Length: 143
Ligand code: FES
Image: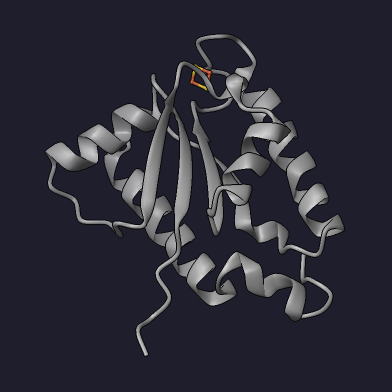
């Protein structure tokens, strides 16, 4: 039987995480190929609907990667994103889906290595959790 390969969606800010992903590529840093990057002008653009839609469309895990706190080009977009991710964690829990499937990260454009680590971290986490469809079969979720 083949190993479960999770589908992960990453909503990345243009000014930091997307640039960091680009840098990781330029530095030829290897990371798991499970992530699909979606470019945003700022993580303040994400809302609960967008995050939940990614799961509905087949993602097993979703993460949002924005600028370091205090460095958002739109002042507090990343703070809003953090609150929305926390809200989606609660929504997932309410519907019997493990809230660890969604996460928020902050990084700078110079952190290509950190971007690769985040992808590896999320890939390993979601591999341990298994496919998102299996969550309802496991009973109550761990926080
Ligand atoms: Fe990067 Fe707002 S501009 S998170």
